[in-house]
Structures are given as structure tokens and as C-alpha cells.
Length: 322
Image 1 (cartoon, one colour):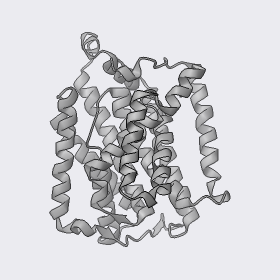
Image 2 (cartoon, rainbow, N blue to C red; image 1 turned 135 degrees about the horizontal axis):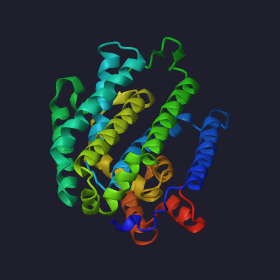
Image 3 (cartoon, rainbow, N blue to C red; image 1 turned 120 degrees about the vertical axis):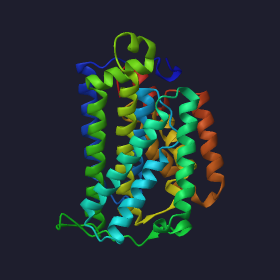
Image 4 (cartoon, one colour; image 1 turned 90 degrees about the horizontal axis):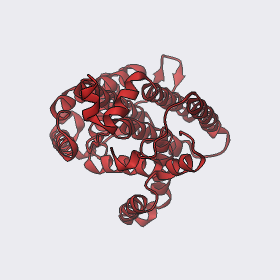
């Protein structure tokens, strides 16, 4: 049993009702953003990272598997979507599918290599594979090295939605985020999700009950990696570039930080954590490299003071599942 999940509340009809109420409130608040004067680029960027953090949380928060290489799915999907959009001139919807497919294949390969390892060995293998891909992309011709793929066309989705318009792009990203979030929510509250939680709590007991735990962990890894790739494909339309930054190990570290700040093993925690970290990066940009030091300090404070994270502490106080 991991120390961070001792206070996990059981899934009940009341808990699911509370979670759906919070989801509806969150969706309405996010849908109202274009009418509030908030800078849409910031929120779109935060939504992409929120989906990435939720995908990562599916693996560690509910499967108990700590990956230090989730940036490879984000970056790979971004590069493949960018290449499909700019070089192959595919429409946006197909560009997204190319990125998702690339992340899906990559998660199968890397999952097959790493999933049978336990604890720190699993984490180190995912980190090593991520760094291997980083250096491959640094030299690969289609990624354009340190320059990355710039000036990616946004185009028209389904021939109707003009993604060059900020409001249209915002709602496309929002729908993508909400769809990914609902999929993760459904996975967590399915029989598959319950088995994942039992593996996290006591894998040997799950094995004794007849579950093939390696298969469940492998499927969770593939789902998590594919959803992380979906976030990477959406991010390409927001940033209009694909670069090595998204594949670097530090990006994987940021995802860990987002999840811990929001609340590991909570449904809404990674969303809050992503918005907190992205907002901090935006407003503290003038501090330059000191932003990294501040992020590290926040990480230490989270571990030492409120180990449940923001949403985890709120859920614990009100005895609610969030």
C-alpha cells in the first residue's frame, strides 16, 4: 500500500454523484472563460497539461506505477501530429488521430519493456526510454533538431471549425479535455478500475484472487500513454509548434509536480495542480531560471506538509471523494 493512498475513500453512488456535480460545475466554469476576459491561450495550455496530468494520475494514483517518462508520449504525439499537419497537409482531425496512434504504438512498446519491473526499476526504465527518445528526436531529420517544427497550420476541423479563431480553438480544446477526462473517470469507476486499485493496494492479494496483474498494469500503461498523446496532439494546435521541450525529462517532472500539488489518486486533483503550476510559470516568468527553484520548493513543501494535495486535503476534510 502506498502512503499517499491510505485515506482513499471507497467508490459509492453518493461519491459518484458528488464527482459528477463537481464535473458539471467545472465544465460550466471552463465554458464561460471566453466571456470573462481571461487570456484563452493560458487556459488552453493549462487544459492540455491537465489532461496529461490526469493520464499520469490514472497510472500512478490508481495503478501505483510511477513513470518518469510520460513526456515521451506527449512529445511523440506532438511531433507526429505536427508533421502530419505541416508536411502531409492532413486536416486537423486526422492530424490528431496520427498523434494518438503514435502514442498508442509507443505505449505498447515501452509498456512491454517496462511493465514487468517493480518499483524504482520500473520508474528508471521509463526515464531511460524517455531520454533515449529525446536524443533520437534531437538527431532525427523530421523533428528539425533543436529548432523543432514551427508554424504548424491550424486549418479547419471537419471542414467547418476554423481553428485560427481563438474562441473556436478554445472550445475544441475544451471538448477534447472533457472527453479525455470523462474517459478517465469511466475507467476509474469501472470493474477494471477497481482491480487496478486492488493491485495498487496489495498486488500479491490480487494475484491470489486470480487476476493477471501484469495484463491490467500493461493496459493501464497503454491507456495512460495514449491519453497523454492526445494531450500532446491538442497542444500542437495551441502552441503551433512541436519542440524537444515536450520530450525532455523535466517535462515528466512537471507532470509529477502537478499531480502531487493537486492530489495524487484524486480525480480533480491533477486539473487543479496543472492550473496552479501553469499559472505560476506565467506569472513568475520574469524570475527566469529561479522558477525551477520555486517549483522544487513547492514540491518539497507538498511532500512535507500536505501530502494529500489541494483536492486531497479538501476531500479529506469534507469526507468526500473528489
